[in-house]
Image 1: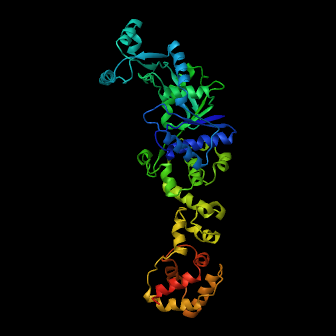
Image 2: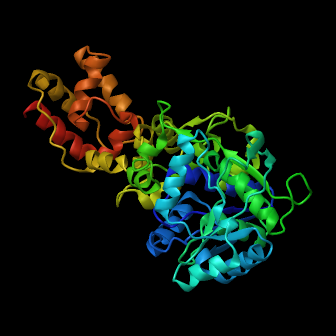
Image 3: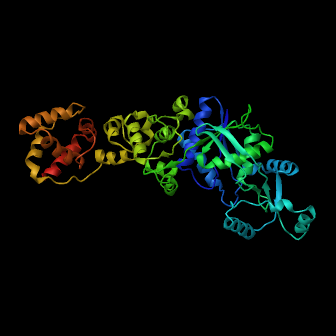
Length: 448
C-alpha cells in the first residue's frame, strides 16, 4: 500500500485535515505500506514555505513520520508532459471565453431551466479561428473533456458511490497563464508515484468522479479492475452541536490546541476513533495503528467535541509517569510533585500553577473565624521528615484535640495551605509544600 497526505501550504493544519493525515498514516503503518507527504503548492500566490515547514512540524508533533516527501512545484515538467498526452488524445481542448462570457452563459442556462454547465462551445472552433485568436494575443485555458458516463467505485467508507459526469462542467486543468490546477496535478502525481489508496474528506466525492475520468485518460487502471486506485472518503466533521466545523477552524487549529496544552497522544487517539463506535484511547500513533480500520467508521458525519477531547487529555495525563513529563515541568519539580498534582490536571500547563502553590508565595486569605482551630493545627503539626502518612497523622491528632471531623476539619486546612477549596490530595501534596511553608501559611491564615 502507498498512501499520501497532500496538504496545500496555504495555511496551518486544523483538526479536519489532521484527521485525514492520521487516517492515512495509520493505514500505511498497519499494512506495512508507505506514507508519502506531498505539498500541493502550485498556487504560487498563496503557498508559503513557512506554512510547509509548519505543517511538517505539526505532523511530527502528532508523532507522524513519512517515507517520502516532495513538492508539486518541483514537478512542472511532468505535468507539461501529461498535458501534452491529453492534448494529443483529444481530452484537453483550448477555450477562449472570458469570465464575463462564462457568467452570461451560466445565467442564460439557468433562466432556461438547464444546469449551468459549460456548453463546450470551444470545441466548435476551427484551427483557423483558434490561430487568429492566438495571433491577436489571446491566451487559451484548457479544459478536460469529460466522458458521457457515470463513474462508479466501491468506497472504503461510504460504500458504493457514483458520480454522473454529464451534469458536471468540463474542468479547467490549465489556466491561461500556463499554471496547473490541483484537479490535474493530483491525478498525475497519484498515477506516477504509484499511490494505491486515496483517503480524504467526503467533500471530494464529486471531484473523485472527475479525477477517475482523468486518471483513466492518462492510462490508469479503470475502477473495478485489479490494480486500480482505491478511494475512501471520511465523512465531514461537525462541531459539538452538529453545525459546520469550518466556522470554528481557527479555534480548532493544531497550533492553537498545542498552545492550549492538548497532548498529541490525546488528539491522535481522539481523531482515530472519531466517527466509530470505539472508545478513543490516547496513545502514540504506532500503538493505535494495529487496531485501525476504515470499516470501523460510520458513514454519518462525526462530531468533534472539544469537551470529549479534553476529557481524554485529562485521563491520559492522570496515567503518565514522571519520566514522560519531566522535561516539560517547571524547573525543580520532582516525581513527588508530579504524583501529587497529576490527578488534578486537565492540561499539562496547569502544573505550573500548582508548582507556584507548592513552592511560591500564594498569599492565603485570612480566616479569623478559624484562628483558634488553626492555632491548634500548628500545635499538632508533626515534625519532619514528612511522607504520605504525615497528613493522616496530623489530622487524626487535630481531630482528637478539637473534636472536628469531615469538612469542618479539612477545609480550613486546605484553604490555609493552598489558598483554594479544591486541589491535589493533601496526603501527597503536603510533603511537597514542606513544613516551613505550611507553618507560615497557617500562621498567616490565622492572623498570628
